[in-house]
Amino acid sequence: MTGQPTFDKPFQDRLQELFLWRRDVRHFKTDPLPKGTLNQLLETATLAPSVGNSQPWRFVKVLDPVRRKAIRDNFEACNKDAMKDYEGERAQSYASLKLSGLDRAPAHIAVFCATETKVGQGLGQKTMPETLKYSVVSSIQTLWLSARAQGIGLGWVSIIQPDEVKKILDIPHKDWDLVAYLCIGYPEEEHKVPELVRKGWQDRLPLSETVIER
Image 1: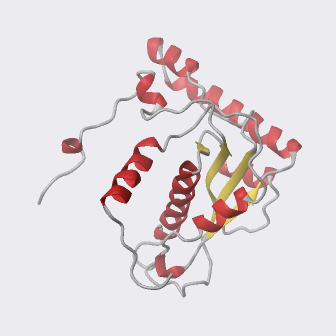
Image 2: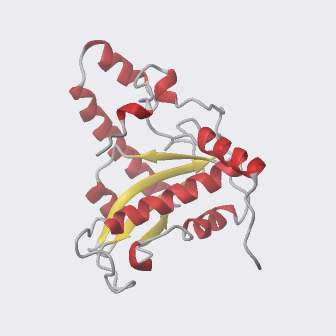
């Protein structure tokens, strides 16, 4: 691109719409993604900012059905254990939630952070080494919005054990830490309001409860 781009008001409005419609998808169609789409999404994800330009994201495409089943089994065990933290109506509510798209989503991506990468020469990491993982999260959000703009949904599975995922996927790198396990595909339904809000699990907080002044 030559020259400075212009992001006019219509573009800004559409971008705000994109933010509003970005959802953590749990209900997927089984339709495969068009050829090349997943690679394009991952390429876009690498445009995210990273501390010291370290680019610590590492993406693992999980294609093997046996490995996928092992991930699913680990989720089931972790989810069963998590249910013990709730009682009464909250326990019933938890049990009613569909917290995973592992069964139907056509694409699974495990996202790791290379915590000992030499790329970037350690710039910006001495006082806050966790910024490496923050950089990986930024790449996930970039992928998420790019997918949403194409009508593709993303679900972030956090009810799994990171060390077990590394074993299941046979990751040989000791310095790779799991940041996210993602399910990607076309959503069964489109919603502006998060599912956990719709089902009464947790409302959005007003801005006044998340901002202070000093």
